[in-house]
Image 1 (cartoon, protein in one colour):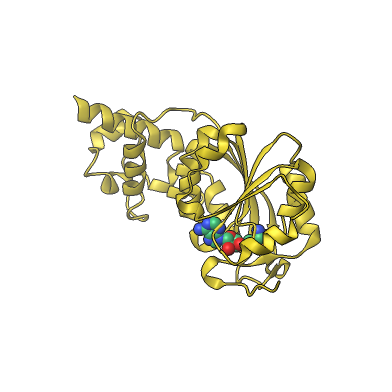
Image 2 (cartoon, protein in one colour):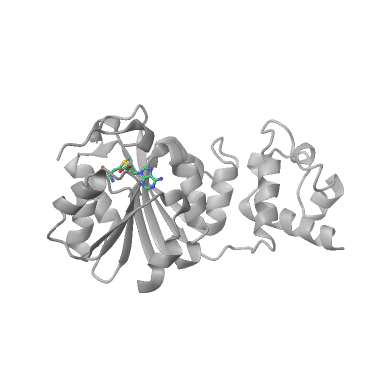
Length: 261
Ligand code: SAM
């Protein structure tokens, strides 16, 4: 069965066996894992996951790939195929067998909203390994003070430990994307400091980065005064990319406290 790669589904199929092996070593799947693959495509990663674990659930959007997967993996009764959009998929329903280990060479056009969606299930997730655009991996893993540090770093790092594992060149895919890629591991964990209102925390972080060149006093003036920033030990003249994740949690909790008083 032939399949023409579709740009609208972000289809860049992995073919480099060395990279596929490195991905499997990073995931280190074993029998008993509750593995889920997003966007199995033509099965480049799927095969090794099934060989190592025996059980695998996959979520694939492209209907034309479903019969290809069914034929290719006919001999693997442990494979469950769900046709659907991972962006609104209820991953919680797959967690009945234990904490999820989610894997995917993700379509780059939806990677950020998909990661936000997956983070909403982080209590049911053990870990996640994704192939993403290298630039997105660098943004997620960036530390305060780094030019890549921003809203995505803070929102992901609040919920997960983020590790940039290794880079992948365009030639490892067919068709080759225009950008470099990288493998990231995200491991959900309890935040160092708990945000009392997650919605407000997200809103405050968005507002803080509304203009990157401006100071935190300027960007947050509709939410907190300079005095309120100082009361939390934050210099109002700092730029948003210099504050840590915990600084933002403290500020959002101060905003909640001020709103309730
Ligand atoms: N895993 C395969 C590989 O490594 O060769 C394919 C990776 S390709 C970059 C992305 C895959 O995600 C494609 O199979 C595509 O059809 C699928 N996909 C795209 N959007 C999706 C969505 N919203 N939900 C689930 N799968 C999606």
